[in-house]
Image 1 (tube, one colour):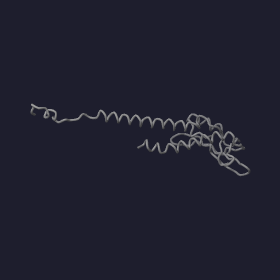
Image 2 (image 1 turned 90 degrees about the horizontal axis):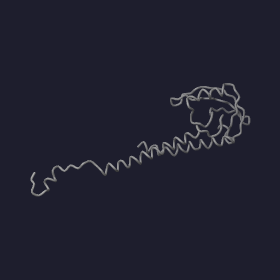
Image 3 (image 1 turned 90 degrees about the vertical axis):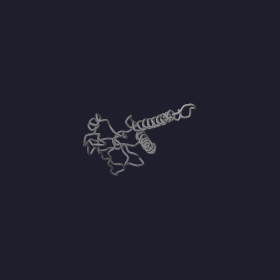
Image 4 (image 1 turned 60 degrees about the vertical axis):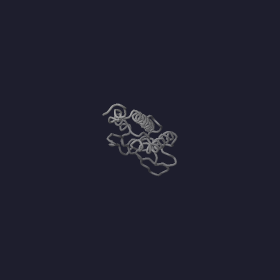
Length: 165
């Protein structure tokens, strides 16, 4: 049942992760503007410490604010302090923004290993779920063929001529 749920959710999760990678790749060509770091903190996300950096910027005179550092799904715990140190409150930063939707912005552009990790993890999980289900199917088939021993309850002795039970 769990495998079925995964196989139903998998295409949607893979699509979202793939779109994220495509946006990360496209972000290298986005126009940039000057921005200012307004807040820096450590957030607890699913039992993990993650950097949360808020910055403001303007595009064509319109003010915007964002918290996206990069398109990565998360950061390793040992990287959090390094990332926070790179972006102190009040510092000026270069903000890349989507020309069609300036609300989509990031401080770090491109598809790094951390960005593509979501796709890799989903594909590995998919392969594992399929492999476990295939193995399970064949193991059930083997168990059906060998099956439990049949009890005869003395029928063999009764069916032989000349022997009485």
